[in-house]
Length: 339
Image 1: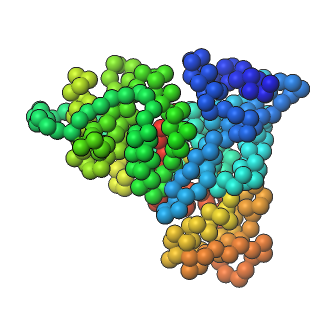
Image 2: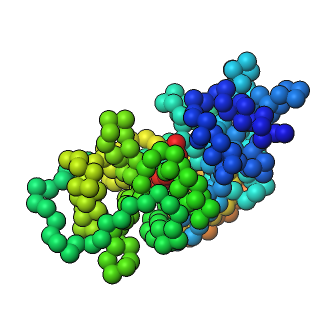
Image 3: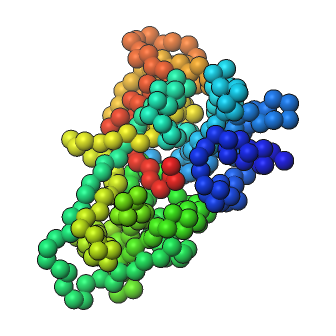
């Protein structure tokens, strides 16, 4: 059975706890999202293409997150992973995926994935919240903590994430996986509520030094974020807490994830419609998805594609360079990816 063979390869390649592996293959893995290369009966390379919606301006696109990409140690440095990714891109294209994303497991992998058309476009900020010396007044919003699935938690998470214009989204099914992962890691979801309605929410995970860090923080107003953070610190008896947040301009941001355009025509049509003032002539080359090769003309909110070059100057771009150019100023964000 292919599932068990991929699971065996995962154990060989990754240093994950058995509880996490069992959870992943029970809740996340299925043969439809898996792609593998075999040598005889043995799976020598595999990855899963996990579907995630993503907001793109006022619309939504289909993305595929590369998860668990691995090659058997005996078959590394032979181009097996490059071939596996090429097959994955072809399958993504057939499935209507516009963008592929991933988070490199090691810093050196950023260069490896760049050679396959990915660009480092997802960043984040680390901030530290320090508890004020002044305690919160009585009658402030109600603090609750849980690691169980609740419908109102997902509805709030979904609503707030969709307010971000270029952000990976989480479906309700994926939210249930996040809850299972939270339990494994002994984390909590903390919420603030007023008059029975959630006004702030945080995914909180333990650190090695018996502290906490926040993987996602959402609130109806900045002051509600501060109240939630202060209440978490007071309840946990800690002076401060680290928070991962979306990147901002003119601040120090850290690299997180990469993206690769799978369907250049659809992406550039969306980009042109979102930014009708853009006027571009592009000569695009893609070594792994040949249907992306060609000439693209963006003007007045529309994108025209031609196999032949039209008169005028053109910007020559690889698929990775195009991905970086499109997302460079958009500050796309991903969180809660269980990386």
